[in-house]
Image 1 (cartoon, rainbow, N blue to C red):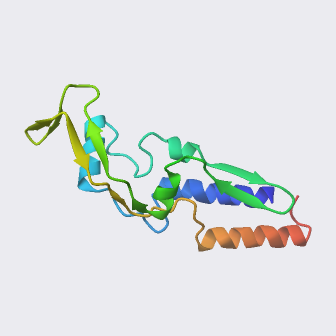
Image 2: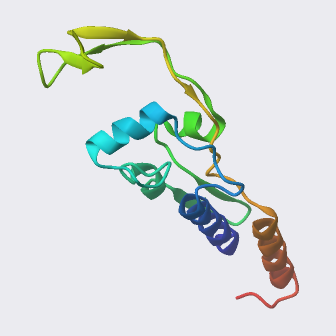
Image 3: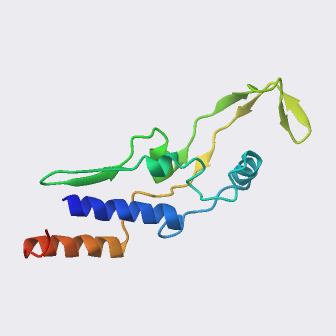
Length: 142
């Protein structure tokens, strides 16, 4: 199971490196503009800070292997969904500035987040796991 855990962890690393297998949907123009402004674009889609990718942990025991993360926002990135409507209030300055308009706060209707499955195995990953199981059963694996 430890070997299978490693196979799954490598698959997740490949997903982050290649930005999905198959490729994830790109970022919305507004998201790109925000990331340009904060200096994190160009960059990788799910790696603005690297926190999600570095939070991936694997566990295994005699009968199971799992890989995942406990970050609160990971599920919406994996599965997609819509964020709740909320108010954005100026914190670092007196006003927010959008296209020549100044406001102390604005209502945000929520954002639609497309699924970008990073905890996924492709056909080659599954084949590798099958080969490792077969090697174990036939005594060729440590």
